Structures are given as C-alpha cells and as structure tokens.
Length: 238
Ligand code: ADP
Ligand code: MG
Image (cartoon, rainbow, N blue to C red; front, side, top):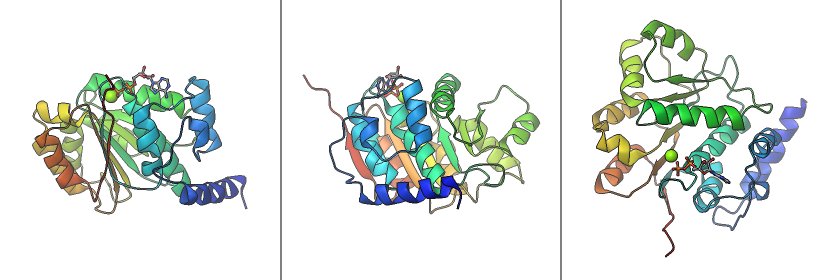
C-alpha cells in the first residue's frame, strides 16, 4: 500500500473518533493531514479562533453547517480546512477526479482572497488543482481551466453562466459546496442565481454556509441548500 493510503486510513479512524462538540484549542488538536498541518504552520496559524474551534470538527465529520460569526473572526479557514481535508481523505483530487468542491463568494475581491489563502495553506504536499471563476477572462479560457479544477472559487453570476451554457461542465462528482458571506450574497441580489446553481449540483453533497449576520433571508437560503444543518454561532463577548 502507498504511504498515502495508510495515512488516509489513520485519519479516517481519528475523524470517526473525534467528538464534534469537543473543546479544541489549536489546529494540532484536530485530526488533520500532515500536508494541511504543514501548510497552516507555514502560514503561522496555530490557535483556533472560536468559529474555527466549533465549525471544523463538525465539518470534518461531514455535517452541513450554518455558521455565523462577525467579520474578522476567521471564517475562511473554518471552511477551507474541512474542504482540503475532506477531499484529501476521500482522495478526490488530481487529474481524473473532476470538480469536487465549489466555493461561492459574493465579490471577485473576496474570491481572490479565499483563493490566496487556499493556495498558501494548501501548498505543502496537497495535490488539488484549484482556480478562480470570477469573470474577467473569456468564457472559453475559463471553460478550459474549469475542466482541470478540483476546487473552484467563484462568484455566483459567472459560475451560473458556465453551468447553464457549457454542456460539458460536469458537476456529478461535486461533494462540497461552500456559500461564504451568505448575507452579502443575498444583499447583492444573488438569491436567484444561488438557487439556480444549487439545482445543478448533486443532492448528496456537504454544504457549509457562513455569514456575518443571521437574517431571515440567510435562514431561507439555508433551508433550500442545507440538510439538517448544525448551527454554529459565535457571539461577541462584551
Ligand atoms: P472572516 O471571513 O470571518 O471575516 P477571515 O477568515 O478573513 O475572517 O480572517 C480574518 C483574519 O484573521 C485574517 O487576517 C486571517 O489571516 C486571520 N486568522 C484567521 N484564522 C486565524 C487563526 N487561527 N490564527 C491567527 N489568525 C487567523
Ligand atoms: Mg470572510
């Protein structure tokens, strides 16, 4: 057996034994691949923020999550670490894996920021191919790039354009969907686009939804896109 297979088996066991409501202080307390641990270390991330401590164990165990925590609380790693880990353990990265995860962000700027964090945390040994689909390039160029991606970070309008116009855009292997800054996605009028995107995706996927605020619109979106979600929220302490 390959070293990777042994690694993955051990991780699967450790994740199965993980208490999803346990108290964790640092990334080192969690069952993560050596690759992710090395990437986090290289970026000088050690202690977990509150939202990360609550959301990551649940997400590692495959649950859907509705997470709310204010801006600056570390929501990006709360979903990127589970994306990297769950794809790694399922071994659905690499040339033949197809598109495994979609991360939707309200703006191009935020999408670029997420992509940079993914690149930095993922650069130590992980084999995924990731890319941005945020417009600004021709549809054909984006189409060719999409065909090679395992993880796409995108804006709603542009990815919907590909889903509706590109016959060859296959999302059958997609197993994780992230809706980041969901309140802003809705404030910017993307509700219909997101609803339409979700219609294209496989139903047996894991969905992580993060938002800075909990609004009626956010819970409506959650009802449509999540399955028995775990609610995770971090309140400001006075
Ligand atoms: P949010 O999406 O909740 O607004 P971000 O994910 O953008 O927050 O993170 C805000 C800042 O906190 C970023 O500069 C990020 O690098 C930093 N950060 C996130 N997680 C940690 C951590 N575990 N330890 C130290 N800094 C962190
Ligand atoms: Mg954010």
